[in-house]
Image (tube, rainbow over all chains, first blue to last red; front, side, top):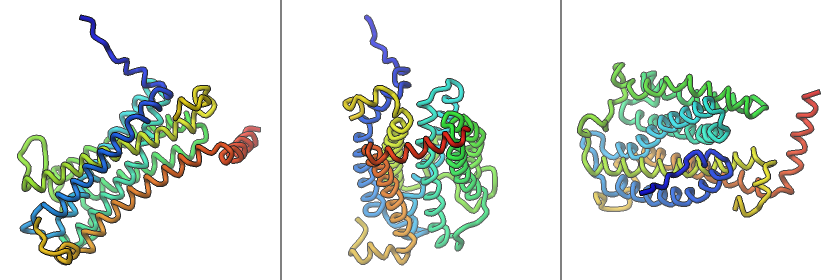
Length: 248
Length: 66
């Protein structure tokens, strides 16, 4: 029986990827809106009041998803940066560059919502705790990546320099993740892990996971939309872009 | 549902500023990111507008190379 195999390398061509992204964006966008609405209803409406923290714990429904995404996007960015260096693939470099602004925003939001949660529960907006400090370093890495890329005129050279920075910075992601284990931090340990039962009520956990899934979809949609803009910016001279129906 | 009135919901047990301050900023940032990208995309679709800027960049590049 002959099996049909999908040639994944075909999508390394910016033209094909541009069209694929155009198909995927509405799906991820609407899924993000739907799951986001569900997450809000569960988190703000259905989930019960926390026995220790009262209502302020509801920040968890945005804080944990943005903090997860800030690390996951960095890993994805570093992955595409590595692909762009190893295979000298221009689409991979564009993907890395498209992920960086969203990652920086997620990191900023993790710090912001964390400060608003820390003030009523710890009595401080900010402490120089290993978790908070390593997350701040992550923000600087994103900003550094974007600044370095913007500082070099030749985009292909900018891609390579920024990719190297992204790869060096990837060491920070496990430091953030394990900081609560390795050091004695004010920040609490992980509530959810793959190896142990979650230490929270089922409704709360559901709300958090639905919100996280919504943010996943949002980030995929916005990164694909940004990569389409980047492709168009960089390939303006390519012949396929002069065919109007190709980039509808 | 564990809320008996809208007032109780909005006050969030006295921590309204922290809870709504988090949710509102997340919502605003996501909205701002989306609209900035939509704006950048719209600019791209107007070749007449984009052209002078591109020419300017090219002339700068030419100036730098000599």
